[in-house]
Image (cartoon, rainbow over all chains, first blue to last red; front, side, top):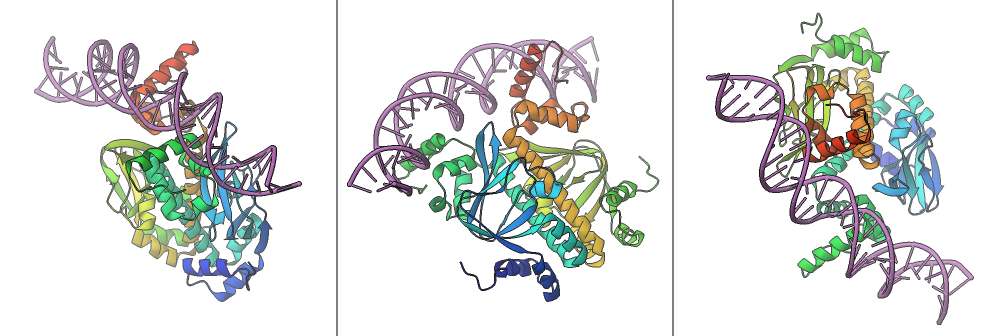
Length: 205
Length: 205
DNA sequence: CCGGCACGTTGATTCAGGTTAAGATTTCAG
DNA sequence: CTGAAATCTTAACCTGAATCAACGTGCCGG
């Protein structure tokens, strides 16, 4: 947990997205970043509250969910080397609709809206990075939406596990059910139904 | 239909997004744009085919849908002053997952992927525009997803009609049902149920 | 004017998943 | 070690929407 250089991961990530970014631009960027740590259970964003920071996860785990009639509907899980933030709230400057809660002790690198806008003015590459990141978020969103429309629950489960294989070890099953859009009971039923058909269990705990 | 200046609408749109864009930058941009027209029923993007252009709708109407088990699931409708394109395919350079079909004769202004990348190199403002547009698409997507998660069918219907009031006059009801994620039969029933409760019909044809 | 087609409605049946409830199992603090 | 809380499973019953099918109604071309 004691990184030699606390922005290392973010820097690597940026240099992969935009290899042409100069060391100078990075130095400026670095200056307005800050590191924050959170304990399991804390929130990085909450419904009704403006989300004023984008956070890049150094280590830890988070979930994003909506509150629907008092019930939590999980939209995504997020670990190391990803952004966590209600980017919708952040961009639109309006109260968040989603909740972003940490499922483990977590360290993030973050930047405030104000500072980011400043960065866009000062560092030209920042706009390219900002564009690429927005595009990537858009692509991820597309993937999610498409899967919800086209895939069966089982297919979505398989995809989830193959994309984030560490998930079953780190989050309870009822959260995965919530992500799939069904109740824990239904999920349990589906699992047992599938495992009865094949002698070798497909869905692992 | 005979616009004095065929890029007028796009220019206005851009200048609203980025007022600081110079006339010079616009001149360069303008040079790589082209106008295309389509007849009702034609496709701007098809599943399995790379979508190599972003198109800005000058006039006309389009729908975006996925094919699920041979059935069409409409994701959005799109008219004047919006982009139509499988932006996912366009950005990722992979075959499209969605179909974009014109529901009326349509005129678009469009730009190819290659030309856009070139523009990003040559005109610095283009990156800002690109970022803002990607951000907006992301926000729209969020709205859609959130509505699907949180709102009832009736609420989503009301939202749709208040956002695109011209819709019922221009598309058949079964397409609206598809957008809402239910069958035409179910939609019909919901409508009649609602209209029975209130003496004055709420859902118009 | 007629026949066909696209669109909308209505009814009967079916089914996946929700709900409720009760146990079984795991986890963890004290 | 022990008991409470959290999690997972199973079963019985219920519900909303899909499916299948039949039937209007309006529109268009010949």
